[in-house]
Amino acid sequence: MNKTELVKKVAAETEMTQKQAAAALESVLGAIQDAVAAGDSVSLIGFGTFSLKCREAHEGRNPATGETMTFAASKTPVFKAGKAFKEKVNG
Image (tube, rainbow, N blue to C red; front, side, top):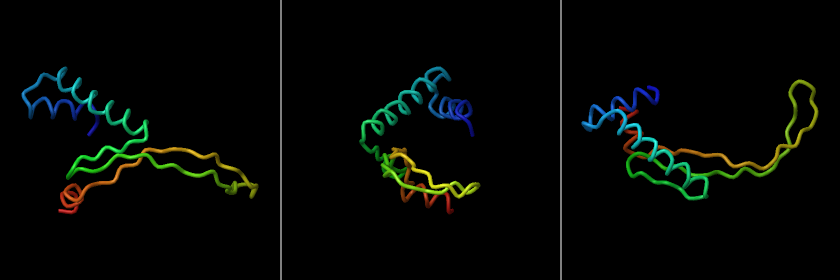
């Protein structure tokens, strides 16, 4: 399912127009992105938690040349599925 299909499904289930559903979805996604970018986590009980993971700088090897490389510290968004979500997926 892509974003357009999700908007159509939300619109059909909530009796909103597709434009209203798209605006609502954009608002929710934007709020999650803003919170995680600021270092906060977003917990949706039964669905999951969006958070930020900080990775330390580390060294690795280029598999083609064997040369040692240094990877800079980075931040990445992570999602951990909640219990109800896992149960639904695992049937």
